[in-house]
Image 1 (cartoon, one colour):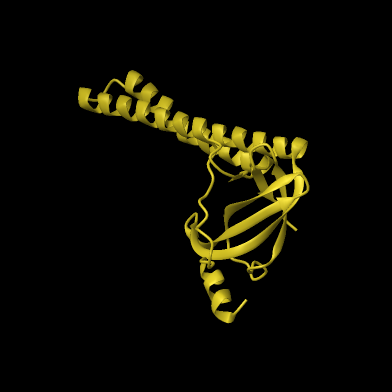
Image 2 (image 1 turned 30 degrees about the horizontal axis):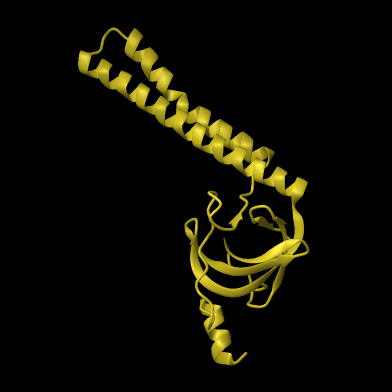
Length: 182
């Protein structure tokens, strides 16, 4: 590979290869398993949801029991109480569904996952959360796994270079995969 081709690969374009789309859960392509919260993360997420929901009933209680406020203030307290409760419940449901989905993925990969190798074929800049990261274009293959291309976004690391081989686990049925740290 020439230095020009290596530079293209570092920027995310490889001659003769189309860009790889990120897969989705609907089975339209390979998709990466999300990492479930640990015990401390679950405790923190649950505590935050309770803290967001708690002011709602408190505001409703004050709206119903405090007698020396105007009707407009009473409606404001009641509306604020209902709104904060609904927002808290919404986020509790969203976080709970995300966590259940992540746990289901992890359990499935533990049960039926096949050891595979993910070779980095291209690297491109990406936004990961609020930070600058990289998108790795991967070629994943292994015994009993039909080779496929996938994308994984992560924080930059000096060891992540084109040609590097990473350990992975794959569910051959639908190409759910996870990169194994190490």
